[in-house]
Structures are given as C-alpha cells and as structure tokens.
Image: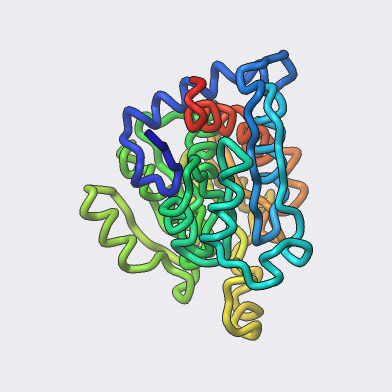
Length: 303
C-alpha cells in the first residue's frame, strides 16, 4: 500500500513517535556511518520553488542510506516550461523513481500529485499549505533539545502565510503544548486553523507583543515574513522587521529557552544570538537529515 506524506493530519501521535524514534536510530548514519539500507532505490526531487535545506537534506538522507537521487532541475529546462501539467509530470517521474519529493507554489498540489502517482509522494511544501517533513524535524528538535512535557512554545512572525507554523501548530496540539501565537494583526493565524486547533482541545492565546511572552516559554519558534506570498509588495514592506530577536530581549528569557527557526532568516534574529546558549536553529537544520531518512525508509518500506 502506498504511503504518501502530505499533511500532519495523515499521522497519529503514535506514528509520529515511531518516526521520531527511528530518526534517533538514524543519527549516526546522518553523521557519516555507512549504510546501504536504500541501495538500489531512486528518489526523484521536483522543486517548483527555491529550496536549500529541504532539497539538500533529502538528497543527503537518500545518499547516506545508499540510494540515488534524480532531480527535475530548473523548471525552465524541463517540459514544465512547455506547458506540461503537474499530473502528467508526476505520472512520468513515477516510472523512473521509487518515491517523489515535491515542492510546489500551489496549495493542495501535493495532495493532487498523490492522486496521480504510482509511487509515494512526499510533500516538501505546497504554497501556504503544509510542510509535514519540516514539522517532523521541528518536533524532533524539541524532543532532542527540550521536552514535550509541559511544553510552552511561542510561534512568532508570519502565521498567516507561513506553512511551517500551520503544520507545527496542528502537531503540537497532539502533544498538549501550551501555544502562544505572536504576530502582527495582519498576519495572524487563519481563523479556520485556530478553530480546528481549539476543536482538538489545543491551548492557544494570541498577542502582538513578543516582550510579553519571552520570559514564559520554553521554545521560541521564529519565522520570517513570507515576502513571496504577499500579493502587494507594499504590504510586505509594512510588515518586514515586525519582530527581531536580540540579546537585549533574551535578558528576560528563561534559562532553558531554546530558539528555533525553519530558515532562511532575513533580519528576525540578530546574528549575535547565534553565539548564545539559546540558539538551536542550525542544529535544527541538521536534524532534517535523520528525520528525512526515517521518512524515506518508511515510504520505501525499508524501515
């Protein structure tokens, strides 16, 4: 049976815990220990939007497990530039690979691709929709660097267009986390998501002030303002730089605070913060490799 990875809604809490445990087993391989678990398997990567960490960590995960990667390359040099539909592209690529990683600007594209694919489709981000593999590495970072027990977390920045926080908030509701949503009023979490979270029994509150929460949380999950999602560049300029994490702000932080960021950052975290005990975002990006190893092994039925 095909196991697509499209949304966090496709997973139960027990399944997430299994993936996180498997990722921990894969950490030594992510750091260089040899493995041939996926020898003879091929992963196809189709990125219709720019990516650094997601693309490279999937490629690293596949290659460190002994598999191979084929890449669609630039959209301009593929048949997509000639008008080929996503459905047709997926049907064709499915004949060449054992799984497909897809990033697409249109929300819902990954779910549609799964409907046409004869191999597992892994959603690497669909517009402002979902980014489940990022969420799983975020959960793994919290497990490794903090704790789910009594977790208090602030989601900061662009909560309207930021797909990482949409997926993460849903997942955190399964761990009974106490969530504070920090954003400008114009970039608040969509009402439909908040209603769904409350239906799940999630504890959430909203504020526009980061100073108000920094002393009360275990995790600051900071996001950039999603410039590419704004229909009007002038509106983006109004929102840019809404929040900035600085050493001065962190003077009020709890001793056990960790700061996470899905990256790339623009100016929302002062580079001086990188040298503090709170910074975990570069370690977080590394954790993408063992987590995506676990997902690839699951999708290719090798775990």
